[in-house]
Image (cartoon, rainbow, N blue to C red; front, top):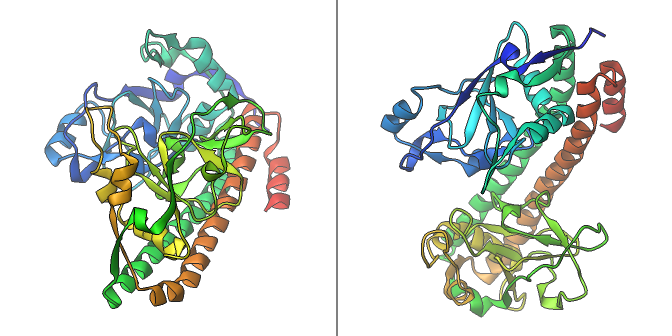
Length: 398
């Protein structure tokens, strides 16, 4: 095992920051990244937007993100980082910086893991500047911050081990994405083939209600409560969820399998739709609307996919001033959704369930792999755990 040395960020990477304004968004073109895209070491482009070629040229005059750059947030969401992938053209968003690794000293992915390590996260907490409204990393002094690294051979061994887990997570996420795309294509084909039917959401639902005003708790025994950050990409992530006291949560606001959840406040999040496919006991906060379809009226799985297809329309329904947009329950109830005939609904239900179950299985496996990776990361990055010992742990777990 090679010796670990303490060096500085400036010795292993060059620091750049992004623009201090936001260009006009477009429907297509190069990506304009967002700090919301940084998620536990991964870049989620569903949280980013597009810009014109003209603005791309303007916003990349200082720096053009390249494959292997480490992207990070320097205001709010401090500590989040992700690797710039190959094959995309993008410019940095506001409050976002990047570290360009000196590859003769540090492996790009090892630099990402080092940034995400508990040791460096503690450095961020101890050296961040507390502002009146937001905390931030002082970019001028960031190059002087300490960071520990071993020699390149051991860096590569660590990257190979943790990277294998990340690669499997990526494969699983692709499986989930393809499964969802197949479901939507199957549903759209079913609607088209028999002409489909139109119906208002309220006429098909037995429950149409906002969630609760949570009384937050730190106890793992209390009730899971979802917030708007939990709804992304048509699915529910429990990672941002919190806990609430359960005794005052009434029955209709406890989630049931195949409920549809709709973000109902705020710019950028309003209108996002997801299906609840878990059997876990949970609820949602008051920024989310629960739509529970009446099985006597419609197949709830098919109705859920009808809502997913209607997301662009739902996103445009918000009312109110900038930053205070609201989707009223009555508006959502008046939304007309397209469905196959009842006979066709019954025919495709099993196929939809099978594809969704495969996606859920892949995502659950990814969650377990991510937990394993996050457990190994601090031990490997501190040098307390040898790569060979970690390889045995991974082999036993997978």
